[in-house]
Image (cartoon, rainbow, N blue to C red; front, side, top):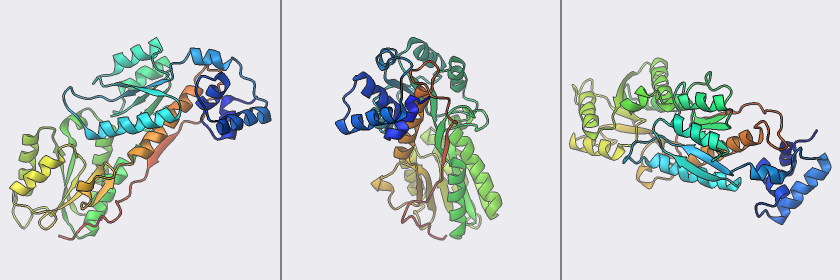
Length: 345
């Protein structure tokens, strides 16, 4: 028996678009409507419940859970929120943002109340309690990032391969001739919370050190500018014969403060110290001269929106529900930005 997902695939649209064509609840182009109706005729699709009934039971909202501290702004979170909102809107969904640091109670409340049809989680932890809570409620969920592939085997996610990204940055730095490298990892609080990107980044630095044989010192960053400055002085102001010649940075929130501290230490970039960045926002003019690995924000946002919509369509009890699809895990391979050259020491 044909399902709404089969119709969507035949017509080349999202399952939600098929629902909108059937219910007339959204304005859909004539070309798309014709494609959907042709697919329905070809497949002999008959919804098990009316699309209008389905529409009345749904909110057409996806909740985006972004844990953050009050008063602290992260440009990365803002960029993802905008890109994801744009991607969700293309599927006919609005976005509700939830910024509670814990998130479990709020997500349970939203899932039970029907305020949203699915959740997308950011800043994912290893063994994230939010995932466990939503799994228990059988609430459609997708992850923007991942903690543990084993713990999230039944939850769709998309992420940059942070382990490979940090490993690539360190290996390329070593290949440029640097034998003494400092890896400035994610901040203390991110590591303590076991954020996936932080833990995978540490694994990447260790793997690259073993692979290259370079002296790679791992230094945790900090969200406190004064603590960060102290740690930079500790690792950089050493005997000239053993002083690091390169700094690979994953924690970019305090990058302006970091560069200012290097200048105050009398270190010129890249003459005295090569700085390689991991996970920058795309198209940042101020970083164009730095060797870097950019975070594919647009690609990740579009992918996780599709995963969330697919999870909604596959939810038990939905009209035209398809058999549960194979869970998608998308690990994006990192690349060095074009034109990014790491100068030798």
